Image (tube, rainbow, N blue to C red; front, side, top):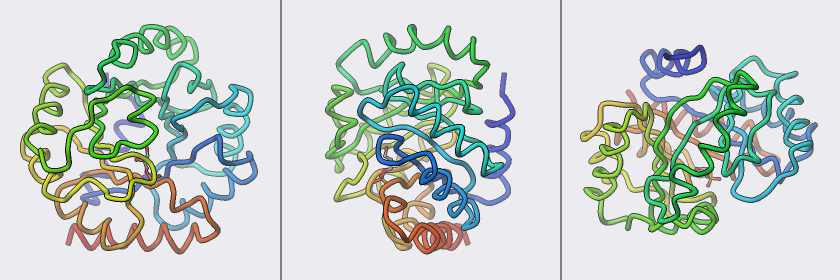
Length: 250
Ligand code: 1GP
């Protein structure tokens, strides 16, 4: 069953080619800061807000952050959990994700088993997604005990992505890690995109218009940026990245 948020994302991708999502790490912001970032990002053309980080945030703080965002913007708020503690009832949807290249069964299926009843109870829309850590992998790679796919092994990333699709996941996320020095390469995006028939999300280390343009023209359907909104130039940075994405699709 495809829910309202997933339908919205698919329609946006269909009409715009590629879209941008802004990631807010609840650990790095106060609720008012989160709502300011969301408002500015929304005005600059971002299509949804993701909330999540790689380390622990108190659930009360997460509740407040998501509530503050929901009060200010109409675009969907999607949880991007690193664990069961990343769930709050106040969001619209949750990436119901499995870290496909983790060696730890907890991140493949354990956390999901613990979290599923809570997702149901809170009536969050689950969007099944296969998460693949690439290159440096950052904190997400360490916390998730991933064996990162090397940058120069696109066919390996494609094999993971295809396995995710065959298992029924409806989105694939190539993650270079928040703040990565090198984003996922356009070559890898290109190869993975040609293997799979489901939308491809790319994030980690994308900071400029040209990097966004390269990712979009290589085939990324959704481009996620987090770090660039953690300073004071949210509007300018998001506009620049959204512009790059649109150009990449022309
Ligand atoms: C991290 O892919 C996201 O999970 C975004 O990365 O913070 O580097 O934009 P950045």
